[in-house]
Length: 222
Image (cartoon, rainbow, N blue to C red; front, side, top):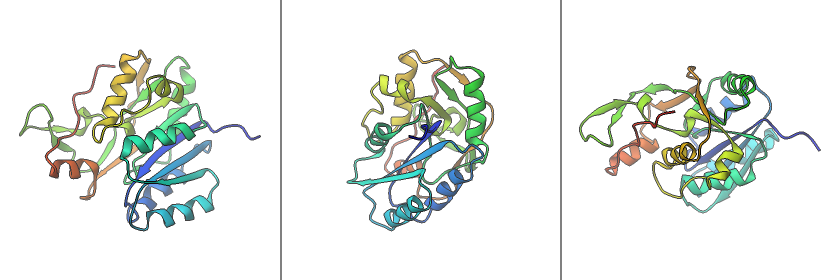
């Protein structure tokens, strides 16, 4: 049997047919070739699923599932159960990786095998300011917020804390806090090779703000 990949990339998606191609192409364009991309269609009603089937047919490293809508936590936990790599990376279906994203993280991982989680800031396309959850009316930079696009983490460390809490928002922040409380050893990287797109209206943050919820912020100390 072939050796497992070094990275499992986790991507939930919902009704993103118009944006999904950019994210998928950015994975296939990685300098690092040892990866698998696991995608969960969380009950889409547009052309997301046929598009995913086409990508899956074009590259055996892409594996896709479709299920009823349950939210990002449910989708990510399902994909974690399917992952075969020792390291987990995350990509939202409206964002993208720069070509060196995985290769830089592999260099970091191999430079210090004692680290369980590597954290890096994101490059923001669009407005970098979001409302502060703790101080209504105040705007803060995305760098003070927390998203899974900022981390690469050992799969066994995530499984040890029970995966994502099955909540509808800020589940990424909740997971990282669980990892920190669980005692994972983490280090920071400086490069911004995860590209976070806030230049369109169909983002999780924008949708939640319209519903009256603000993004999770104020990172824990690492």
